[in-house]
Length: 438
Image 1 (cartoon, one colour):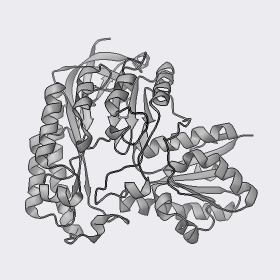
Image 2 (cartoon, one colour):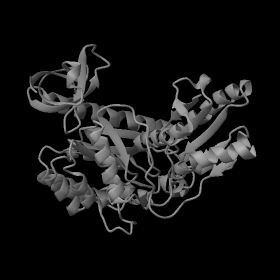
Image 3 (cartoon, helix red, strand yellow):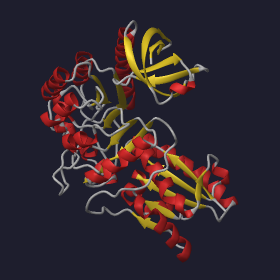
């Protein structure tokens, strides 16, 4: 008889993929995924701690699960991911009914932790920081066109606002041969696009004894039969090397899109953030990238309201966003995080100031996105169709290599295929087109 597994995931693509790997590890033990929490035998909460709001959502959800557990004392509940690593045994002090607490680096231990908890009747905690290369784990992915592949975990940077070095530990890269093998298998299964994942993905190999850097890994993946597009996220500006730029320019599978967090346009704030580059350094890197990779689109992350950020600092961020012409950005208010140096900085801003600045930044973003989308109308683009459009029944949606999403009236048989599409109009922030050739 199958046991039912429910996974609640918070946070980034890394967490989404970690949940796929948890499901893959538990499949041999008879666990099948359910979308209903109330019928699960095992509930896993895969948490995020990058911002305070994500933690608040997770703790609120734990309150709901506790009510379910009271009605079903045999229900097994585990808390995984960044918040589990950060809180550790304190989670059991607050919620003694939880059976498993494990970090993202202990996912490979999940089946063993379950067995030991069942046999001993005690909760299991695993939040250490293991050494060596990152393990290769099975993943239970949904059928589709796109897949995520984790190539490394952890981070060696010490950005003063970021809890990742504490919540995910030191950098560990996977063996390149295992990554190539996984991507090859995915292409054989029909996945046409793969996104490589890492907290600092372009520093891949920096701590590995293998001697393979990120650019060389891209070269080993390019040309895998059936793989049409290769993306990666998230990159750090200080780790954008000439070798990486040359690989992006030369390799046919690598898409002309890069997510490159700027965080602030003020050198003073960047220094307080310990980002290890200046605005001018960033500008030079993207100019080199754009010269080498025609048509490259850039997206970014921005934090507003960092401790000590003045109105002038924020104006410099607005100027930088406009000057670099990002096609999209993820903007966040600074959030106090435990175990981060920024907590000790002076000049923490009022919430109202942070909120007002965020709204001003989002207004600039909307103009940039509208300009980008408007510029695509009248052009012809190569689209990889991913599936049915959720907003327009009978249509499909897909993406350009530059990561622009389009909705097209097209047959279901084109899912997983590339086609040429004429972009005809922009309606309600959605690009639409018609097939020109398959």
